[in-house]
Image (cartoon, rainbow, N blue to C red; front, top):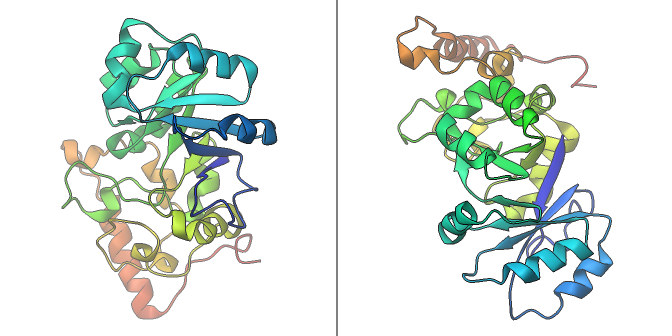
Length: 266
């Protein structure tokens, strides 16, 4: 599992920024220090986020030719139509958060290097992994936000990843990014990349997780079920695993029995 952090004024002096495998930086046409920055960090994969409109593609091509570690991440709203008409001949991907199969296949066919998997597709991550490998593409996720198209969805039926489960997902996911926590990036990097556990309520580390369920009372098989369940409970299936996990968690809490594994508690 690789970790990608945003490199900006909030994170550039953080303890974790140098440990990250990749950086996201924002392209600024008025910034004349870009080339100096790229010369300094040739050993780091750098994703240059192009949010400005009407950028010169020839410039981006030359940049990618000169620096093999450079990938261009485009703002979807500004550049999707342009990319559809003329696929860039350099390494690129989109900031689009993909939540259904039609969009996934369409984006893969454009020749991207990476895709962001969110919401319902997170419950079919095993199938997603098999497909994108055929395209030689990396999958990227945001583990620290509970994701659903409907805000009132049961929190346990939203897509997110607990720190304890990050190694399980590493068989299917290539890159982790953290959503909207740049000022707390050292905390999140330590929890997910190093400690890989959280002994508290999930809403303390998972954004938009509207529940007081305590993580230390959730059974280890939680992730194994979610990776491939396809949210069949919402499609007429009798599966009630999320509900059962919630009830069991409440029972364990009342009994003061903490779920743990020897390996993670060393």
